Image (cartoon, rainbow, N blue to C red; front, side, top):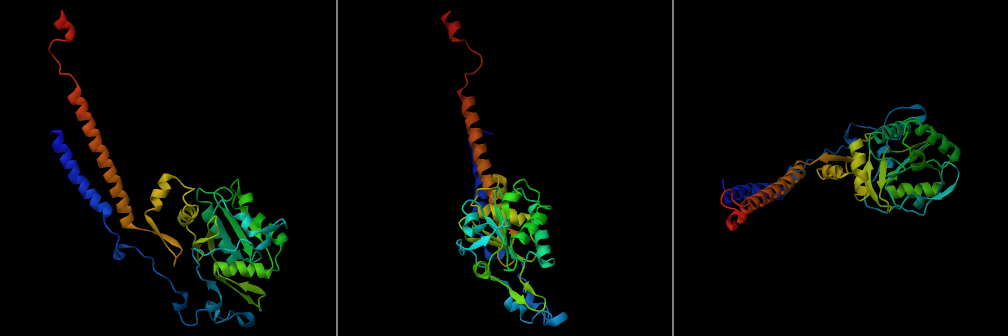
Length: 310
């Protein structure tokens, strides 16, 4: 088969690959994760009996997370770190994404479960706190201070043993005004429960960009390592992660209602189509180059110039 026929066949195949790559992504083809409405899962979902009155019936209205994606977090708020040093929130921003959790450090129920689930997922991703990102655990209880924060940090670092963990995972306490201001900016609603002398608050992690803008939320004590990894890559503006990681990320879509990344088949097909197009172009170039080299070689046989001169 001559070079013209080969090129013609490859161009035809190239057209098919380009059509696949250019195919529009319709709403019908987009995989959407179902939205779960906790308020629809039974009558009086929050009304159950406990000592001293139990949990309020209107808990769902008073406690929750109102996502404020792309909103600016106030970086001038003041807290104390686990050593008792006065710190400004903005000190932890500027270079790396920051994960923020707001909880009670003395709580051994939801807070403990949240930190355990968070640590388990963090241990499974290639990025490390203190190197590619920072973590702020901020107490919502103004009664808690640096001594409690230091105990909480020591306990957490028993499970999260990355070399840079101590420098990258911070435990902050503060007064009610600064705590409330941070919670409001993150969209976190919580309430004081007098019978138990505890705060009732939602679980969740907020990821903030180095500039202080809210990037992602992780909710429902279900923190997947893949979601952490992809969100950190996006929040860092592609400063972390390998080329393969970023190619994989392009095939996933973030769903704010679930706080998770779902696989998008059409995005995957576009990547495959692009790879096919590039591979085909390289094949055409290689075949044309080889054909030119063959046609430029002298034919065997005949007298050499030296022989003719003789």
